[in-house]
Length: 297
Image (cartoon, rainbow, N blue to C red):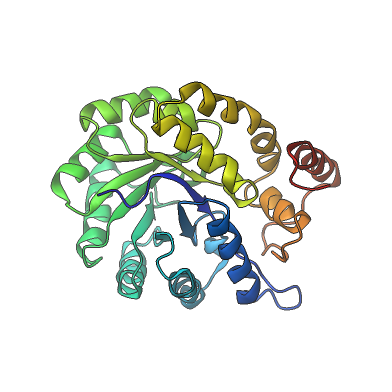
């Protein structure tokens, strides 16, 4: 069984203005907003959640809060990857004990492991994750390395709880090869909001979405329409949300999306360094796109 289908939100982490500690009251509001507006799963402590700026204890605390507060209303998938294999094992094992429905494990950044090293890295994490389902995360633009289709096929064949991949390489040819080598026996999710329908046409189950932070219903509906045979309807929403996507990635994620969440009246708070606030010109265009989509007045 798949961990989820359709649209999962890569949720932002709200911080207090004064000391940049996690604002759990605001986080609870964001979780409720997502569930009430059709999000099919929540991905916590990913890139969009600024997990890279958290201490290991903060990371664990945020994941536990999300799991406990969500109370199985929708699946919770927790980011638990690291460029240090032992750190990733520690995070994955602990978060699995909290009751996560799945783990999102990124390609180890900076170290740039070989494909042989990746097989060992992901296998070791999976073995220590108490059977919790794992979604690999391939995002070469952030990590400096690519999980080759052959590597994914080997892992899916040899490691029972490696069940899916979030593909954000942007390389459609690679994704076609991946689905060919696995014979489609992998849960494929788009990691790019502008490629959801194309990936679903190759057997994808949905998206782990940044846009869902502000337009969860639209992203859910896009995936739902596709899976129910309304490809034209899904493609229409893909086109309609492109303006949001374009502006949410006018600067490094999650700079724009956190600005957008604040513009909608949620208290997402500031960013943690080294991320800085959005440039005024970009912020103005983002606000215009949100207004045009009916998200703000």
